Length: 348
Image 1 (cartoon, rainbow, N blue to C red):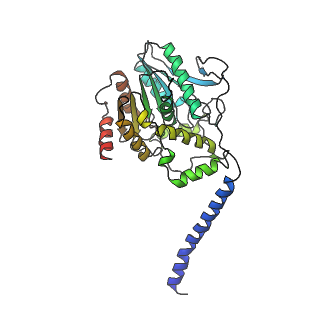
Image 2 (cartoon, rainbow, N blue to C red):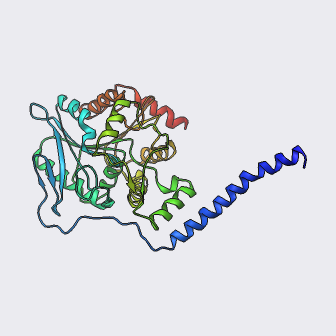
């Protein structure tokens, strides 16, 4: 066998190995898909009491106690923000922006959503309807407490998707606007087939399997100190059940499909360096949202922004834009990120 023949044989070996591995993986996926498991959600129980707003907890109608944080100005607020955290995070995410907004005269509230932080059934998915219902009830309670102040809903990542879906409910209380910070919009229709197939197979075979983000080499923020603090924080979930990821994907499907019917006065923030929610589904959502005539929409895209826009090193820039949008609804945001968004969306 000559040198050329050796090179050909050696070149074929990795291919054969990959082929065998692919066949083995396909066989494993088929075997697992026949095991009969189903991804579960863990919705609220029966309504046993009226929802209540406590000092450090939001008591839901089914009796779940959701830890509540608040950041209040020294005097009567001129506006109110209800903030929803992202996936595997909890209400502490809003600590720095909450302090800033309270100094600007805006009262802020954030709570640990079901299955996250110190809320009940940690690590388990409650279902999109449950998260939307909790937001609806807290909005109603805060509108009663602050009848003269405008109410704004702010959602980061998963929280943004929940805000979008909640606004589709016919009995959702009126709010003055919504703020979507890098909302989770990576719907199945925008994912590669092998990703959706693998997710379906795992969710219907080993829904209890836990996954971590280690090895993905994704940079969610340029604020390294903040990321390290999150890594040390025991309240941040580090390993996620497959069925919970499956539930999140259901939520993202619903949020993505709601682009053209989003009826709220909207400010949407997105970072050009976001490595968590891809540009393709985000820009597709924005194009649909901006062509609808249901309400005024403002889009801000930050050239140096990552996924955690409200905690990035440039976070104060986004905070200032939010305050200006709430207080003045200016023609242009102070940062000029809305002008940047028009450039990118027009050229894209």
